[in-house]
Length: 113
Length: 110
Image (cartoon, rainbow over all chains, first blue to last red; front, side, top):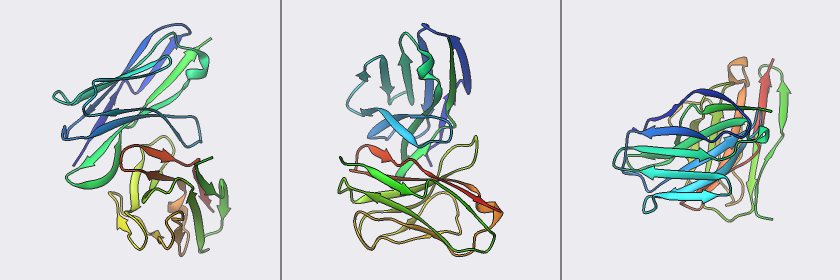
C-alpha cells in the first residue's frame, strides 16, 4: 500500500525567497506523480504532472523533480509571492494494481508580504 | 471548456435526510473518483469507477454509495445523513495519467 509523506508540514517565509517542498513515497513502482495546490475550503488545482520517464517538469516559477529509485519528489518554487500561499499536496498512484491516488498530508505554505 | 463540476458547493442538512452530491465532467474520461477530506486532514479515496456500470470501494470505508449510469456523471448518495458525515467531498476524473478535481462539496450535517 502506497504511503506518501510530505515535509515540512508548514512553512512561513518572506516574499521573494526560493523554497523547496519535499515528498517521499514508499512504492516506487509508480508511472507518474502529481503536485496539487489547495486553497482554504477549495478544490485541488493541478500544478505539475511528472511521468516516470521524466526527471523534471517545469511550469513558470515551479519546478518538480522525481527520483523513483529513492522514492522522492521535490517541488521548487522560485521567487515566492504572497499569492503562492496555499497548501501543496503531493500525490502518487495507490500501487499494488489499485487505481486512484494516495495523498500526503500537505505542506501549508505562508508567504509573508 | 472541458471541466469537472460539483453541486452543491455547500450543503447544510439535518440528521436522517437523504442527500445526493452531484459530479459531472465534460472531458470524456472513463475513470472517476470520490475523495473525502476532513478539515485539516489529508484526502482519502472512498469510491471510484472505471466506466459505465463500474463502481469500486476505495481505501476509506464509507456509508455512502455511488452509481455510474452515464460516462459523464458520478453521483454520491447518503441514504441517512449523520453528523459524522460532515466533511468535504471532492470528485475527480482521470484520462489514465493526470487527475482533474472539482471544487468540492462542503457538507455539514446538523
